Image 1 (tube, rainbow, N blue to C red):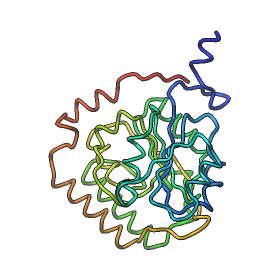
Image 2: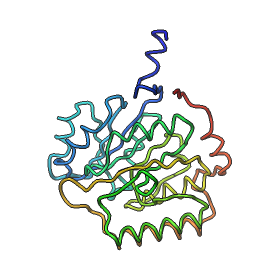
Image 3: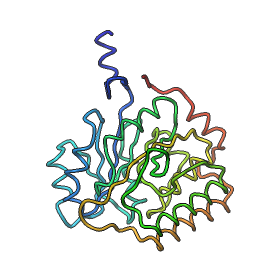
Length: 265
């Protein structure tokens, strides 16, 4: 292999090298105690870390900069996880974007599997705690039931085949953002992403993922409140036949998403 080729591709494992830069977007609010665990698990070959700070009152921003001096800090302008992710996506410069939570519940080493699925041909790599090989230590029975019901509803209404709807560990080609056209503020953002990816007929590959318990602090998620928000998004999206893609038809988006990218394995 020539020197120029080696410079073009970055090895990410013994069996895979990639050219596309990977951005990891992390929404965070008062997560100073958890960031050391999250940052430690991130692969050293990623292009950048974009941390969206939700007006933290602790040392979240300072700790992030101490752990990774090149971290890109984005102040969140709105409220809620959806708003944070949208800000992070806009700031990301990588061709591949990975979403991961700041509470230590996700294993950054799994990013390799997500990225591998994308460079192998998927448009959207969707984490699933209920696919074979996945697991969760952080779901109550009521949350599991709610997630199962909402997942079945989305599958039926939008022709999807998801095994886990409300999970935030995902990765995708940045070009897919046009089709998702995200416009929500809260925890329902993952559901909206999944619905619009299905509507745009993008190629989705589920990635088995293990969710751990939050390491420190308490979650802002509220099962009933946020479950109802997810349900409202599902019903709204079903009622609305127009695609939020700046006027482009789904067939056009699917064709654009299928365009060859700089990828290698």
